Length: 406
Image (cartoon, rainbow, N blue to C red; front, side):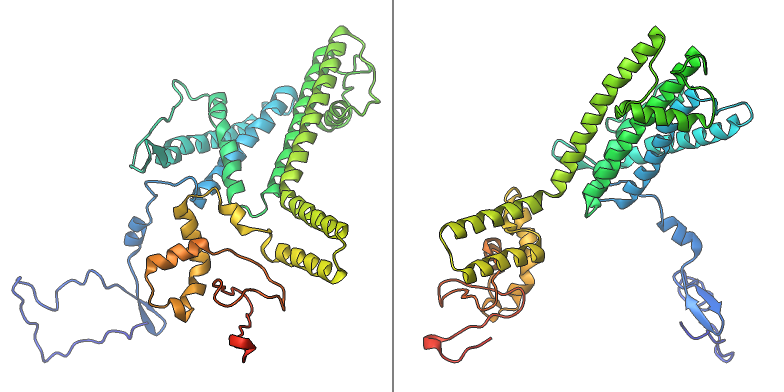
């Protein structure tokens, strides 16, 4: 806060400046004041703030969180159509009395699709010929729908947005396997949802309540048909036998589809859980193999206890047994960048390396390897290698086991 400006003294007249204006009349374009209570605050006018908060001309789809948030709304609109179009086609839920509500949501989803096509997709960065294209208004290979923008055409056009959202969201989540489990469960629920809609359509085609196999028209139609779909796709059994040829063919197709879909879902769920616990499985395998080796050669129990403690502490402290395995596939430049962020603060505190050439320090950082030692372990001999402690402290001894230093 600045003190409120006081009025100038009347004794001094304004002095003309070479431009022909008076000093007192000279506009101050950078100073704007807002009086609040007893203080005066300097602020920028709202028009300037509005001009500076313009929509970005180029969007990086890999790192921009705003684009991931926008994809969430696009996927929500796409899921609305995927789930509700079969319901409106099969069940008598869309009537002349409520059709305007359905159309209102449909037009809102179409508006989201159009904004995504015309505003966001035209600003996405992409790689072409080894260069990142960030030019404003560059459309690239964007394919816009021709003719009338039909609802189904927009729905099919946004089909890839669902998979793009999954990839972007999994890249920023720390525990992506939870989202994969939820997505796989949603696939199973959607297949049951479509099957329930088909069952109601088959019942309406045969006539509601005409046979014991079709839906009898009592209770909540969607819940009753969904219950039938669950029992059919999961092959629980206990359903009435079909009577007509149409019912027999429909039931056979449902059984075949149910066995195939359920086996695919079980396989996907197994892959998701296996990928989520791959690191833990590798850790258990290494530990079990080491214990088997020590038992075979009858290693003393004290040594076996220290080995087990090292495995447990290393796994719980850094989540892996060897950090270098993760960086093998990266180029040298990226490995150097990661090594600088991880180890440069440690090396810069060592008096031996202060004043050394920067490139020499970078080359040394790439050769550093993280190793976990337990308390009272003998780390290294003198003049054999350089050891830097990232955590805790390391006790160093001089010549002939003289006075130790920390």
